[in-house]
Amino acid sequence: MEALMEKIQASARKVVEEVCRVTAGERVLIITNRVVERSRIVWNKLEYSLEVAQTEVISQALHDACLAVGACPVVVVQPPKTSLDAADKAVLAALATEPSVCFSISHNMLGKDAGAIVQPYQDAEGNSFDHIFDYLLYGKKVMRSVWTPGVTLEMFARTVDIDYGQLQERCRRLCELYENVVTVEVTAPAGTDLVIPVAGRRPFRDDGDFSRPGTGGNIPAGEVFISPVVGNGTDTGCAGRIAFDGSMSVAGGCVAIQEPILVEVVGGFVTSISGGPEAEQLRDTITNAEEEAKAMGADGRLSPEDAQLYCRNARNIGELGIGLNPAALISGKMLEDEKAFRTCHIAIGENYDNDAHALIHLDGVIRNPTIHFVYQDGSRRRVLSEGVLEW
Image (cartoon, rainbow, N blue to C red; front, side, top):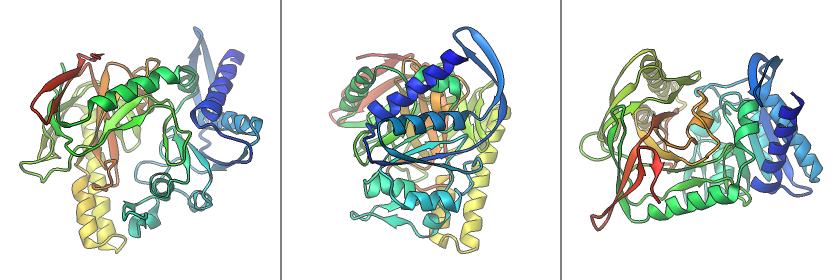
């Protein structure tokens, strides 16, 4: 156990000193949960069974690493949140102080900003943000951040202390390949066959360099992702079939998929979902998000027009991501699963370009995909072949 704790502390130092480059005097806000559970942890071929609040232990390691560089960390603890819960007012108030760095080390989710959904923040360019966290990070660009929904001790120890220079080069190269791409074609052995329009979109990189204001991402890091062009529900937008066969985000967290979830997509939106118990959980999560959006419109928390959009976008195809972290595995935790080599993931719900707001963003992992980029001049380039990078 001592070796595991030493590795967690080393990973925390890596995040503080290299990923975010926290400096003396900076204010650091750490938002976490205290969920004590009996956990089975395997490390260096030894198995431990203990009652522990894993996110709290990681938060304490980050707190101590911040103190070591002379920063001023503060830890705020709230109950665990699902994808439809609101963050505690104390958390939103702490964010409103505009810390230089924010670490969201959550058991599941940070929680929504109920006030900003009703009255979104606007940046200088007129972009709209329905959470103060996103506004400070992407709008005002006064904060840098790391968020880790569903992180575990073993995951943090194994996937964080990696070669970030190598990861950043992979992400840079894939982003270069996206230049002038108009559509992406994704196929996979379980049955995925999807065409994704991306003309005019720019890719984002989660490469572990969150050292400048306005940058942030997951730890573990390791993906390049892009928002598909929002469809019209009929003849524009993503089209085809998705067969999720790795893991899937649902209301309560992440589930490992035993029977592929088959999702039909027309005009950029999900039209049907079939499969086993995991498919039912996905269907219920989407339905609940639709019903909540309608309820928000009915009681005035959203305008009728916004309520209709939030309801519609619960079925939007909001993201295509490609995993690039060599230490990541499909573990049943989406935070890690979507970073794993030989996978891609597609999200249902809100996107990252702020033109498809929704109450959910549900990632689903696809194993061993083959991915082609199609360019403006009609040329094609295969970037993954059955999960293997081809550059």
